[in-house]
Length: 156
Image 1 (cartoon, one colour):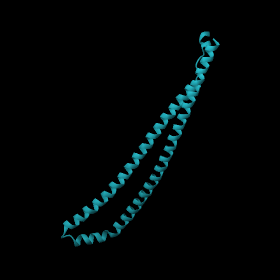
Image 2 (tube, rainbow, N blue to C red):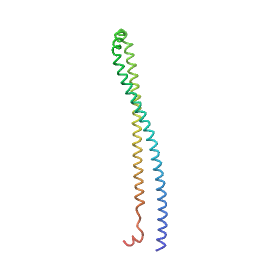
Image 3 (cartoon, rainbow, N blue to C red):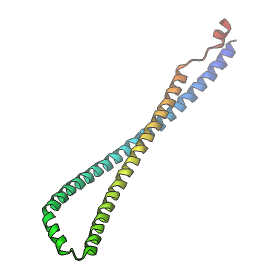
Image 4 (spheres, rainbow, N blue to C red):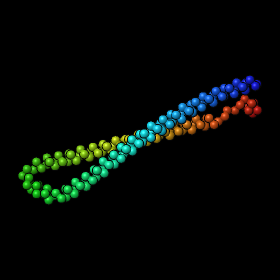
């Protein structure tokens, strides 16, 4: 009986050592994931800052352009009267200006779309971290449980 308990104790001690090793590996993996996540978050914050600066510049330039357009509206009317005979030239310039504004808008929209994609990646990483933390919690719960001994089973 004592030898059975001794072998069971040895088995449980080996199992405990193995679980402690797995726990250390899991903690190391979690730390690596957290570090990686922190680096990515930092990079994304820098990118967000750059996008915000670009957006601020765009708003500023749009306001300046709006003021400039108001100031030049009388000149535009005069020029329209001047080129009234050449409507094709005026419409071509308008199309080119609209195309340029549309291209600029689409480029900025693409940047915003990329930013939203980055945010979705962050969300997915956060979900992955939550999953890992859940796994760690399960491992912890297994480690905190002590299996019943043979004597306790026989007593029952």
